[in-house]
Length: 151
Image (tube, rainbow, N blue to C red):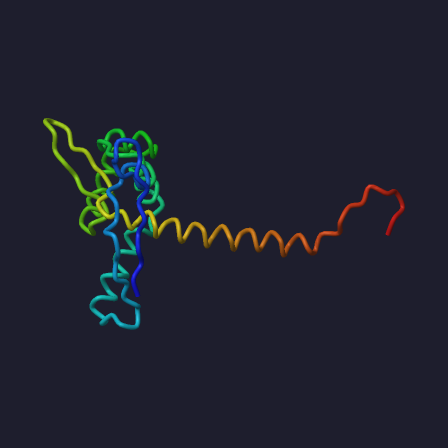
């Protein structure tokens, strides 16, 4: 199975995808879970564990706007520099983000743009389930009519 990425061209011929993230390769080959050996599944589980921490998701969210220093990230996610640094190190270890030193500063950015697609897929699924649950609950609420004495 292949998933093709379409990137919209912006003014000046530059490509733009998800707030300054590099575009995905034109077509990616997707391997089904049942085709992966157990060792590869362990890597997949580690990747998802890395994404399972709310602070890391908040960091990825702020990095979606472009590259930032650790201090800027810490301020945006309302956490300490030490805590954010620890999360950044783990995300870098698993290839989610990359860092670049410039003078005395280090800037971080998203290294794997597929993380946006994954997060959008998961968030969309959760939103649909939430909407469905609200609709189902609404069916149990007696509709209010504006008429007095109606039953």
